[in-house]
Length: 307
Image (cartoon, rainbow, N blue to C red; front, side, top):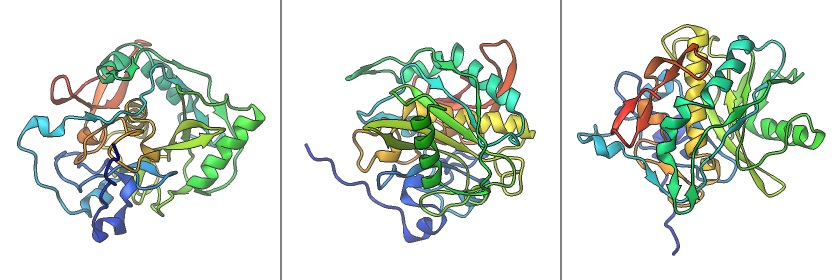
């Protein structure tokens, strides 16, 4: 059966963020404030976590009165069953590398994955379970103005060169950038202006690959617009948002309809992290250390919950 094409946002909303920016528009203080969210409208686009400033500029949507209005629907696409995280640092100037690397190792197994396992699927049969995280790769990139196309090209070249493992259905490549690097998404949105971070989908040799783009949230625009705690706490919070959304909806960047490859999505509020955008909490993860993460939406309890 042919699925209808996804409708686009209003022209006003498009002036702030493109159709594919999708969710991540819910305000930290009131998750019901934002704009109607849509999955990507063209191949190669990204799903963004907007800054507070960008969310405030969007027209509000009607407040949901019932908690089940936020329920995520499964649209038939892939989930990441046993995530294999391969952190990448754009260069040696990325701050807090040791803590970020430890975070990915701790979040990819144990209670966080147990929480996300509620988004396992029966048709097709996909079970979300524990994952792994490798040692980080420190790239020697010097560009301070980077586009999403250039990021995808960098990853493709790294796969070809063997500096990063080639992608499979489980691999996730979160790329962290140092202060002073400006990133432009495929719709023209700018890091620390419109977005705090995003996750995207590319294709390498017929295999989808999943990546995250995470600017330094301590720099102007992101500071104060991407979390209300310290730089490292805001960093792990934003990273947890993109991590959870990648596991539960990795191919959103290729979605053009409400159907495959879209996975878990709410047609009004977006992905698992969007509904609870900016709601930070502290949690002890698998390594026994305390990290700041963002609450994620739970279909099981119909709340923003602590993973």
